Length: 79
Image (cartoon, rainbow, N blue to C red; front, side):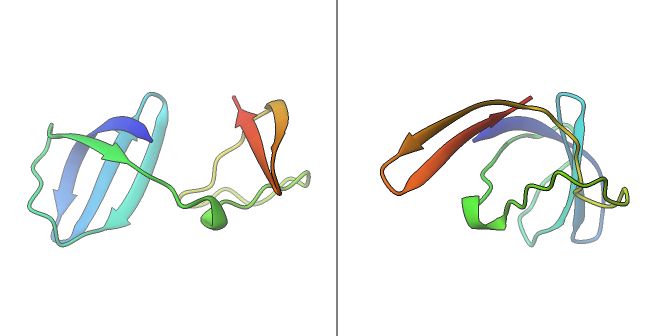
């Protein structure tokens, strides 16, 4: 879960800033610029790649800091 804030909103498209990361998403929630939000990302919606990919909306680069097995899953910390 990531804490952030709403940047300018255009209709149902919102921009959310979390530290240096900016997410763009559609929502029907009543949000205003500056509102604090908590963003939850479904683990199955995250794709890691060792290949350089084209920059795009909701695409971020990072470095894997640690990997810990938790049962049949992995906890991966990305910086």
